[in-house]
Image (cartoon, rainbow, N blue to C red):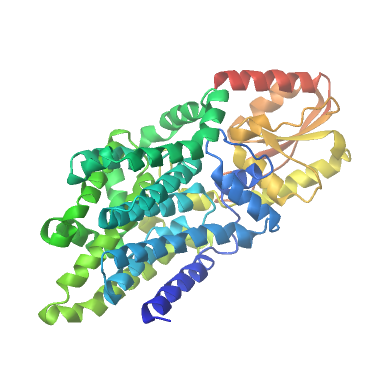
Length: 508
């Protein structure tokens, strides 16, 4: 076995093991993870907020027992595979052991550590973007059409995972047109490859058409509630923070595209990056949407850095370059990852604020980062919902209704009551209501701000409306969320639910 292969396996092992060490046991799964896990029980060619690929992975997790280990395993795996593809790009660019190690270290000690601790589409997204760039590099070097089909399959899977890959394509295609690679547009295999991509994504496109393109409604809602709070300055600042421990590798890449002759055929990636980043800024996209653009640049930066440091005394800087990302990143672990308790995090509020880490999607600063707050209170919520259902002693005729997808998914993941499925009018749960005429009682999980109004509204519909409990976890985003017991309905609840579902769907 070659020494570089042993080195690669070492990096991949470190990556996989490290991802399991970066979450304190006090934290539950993340709000978004519960939705993706529930999608495995309702397989389809599309969903309200995401394409279907993550549900397929969730189905595999479900078959493996749905345990936390497997929930964490797959994003860690995709993170490791991203390192592998960057490694292969560096090999294709004739990089030596230092370039290979530098690329792996730059990816390892970066935002990918944070991305890869959560089961969300992002981990696969950035891996597949890197694959697309790798196949293009191979095609440029070999002119073999097989690489175009590899690119097409990657793009197809990328679309089935997350529609953000459109930004990659909108940057890449104009970059092809303005460089010498425009002759690709005269290659019949390029169009056959496009056909392959279309065949892969066709079922999802049909699903979107059949469901009146919910992706458009989702984007409009996202723009109205979240993207409106995005500023250009904050977007650019976060781009720097994503790879701050190895930003010198990225700077080296940009320099190399102009000063290193072997990179001349690959300047397409520089222009594609600039075009995609420009589109992200124009559309006020979230900063993390752009992360997939960087791994290929890191590969180029590592190769050129190796050339720069191979002359004279500069060779002695190589170990320093490899150590530097670890020296910078590891002391920051308690700010970047939930390895401390929320109480300990509270004492670091000033540090969090300095780096903009406690600025939530509402545009305001809070006590701890939003992602961490979204990993608290869920087990408590599920346990109290279970207790409320048991108190009614009639689970067969009881509906658990939640305000949002996180609540519904968490109850379904942690509940000990066999066969119980919480629902919501939020996200895909709108399509998963168990419509039956036998519903007599409702356990309602209500966000704190709406509890009193909801109780008043429901007094005429049920014989009794009482508060059973609320989420006490002080740092949870769901703090104050209340469990209501609505006992013995006075109305045809099934008919009301059907009406409400129809109204909600009409909004979309």
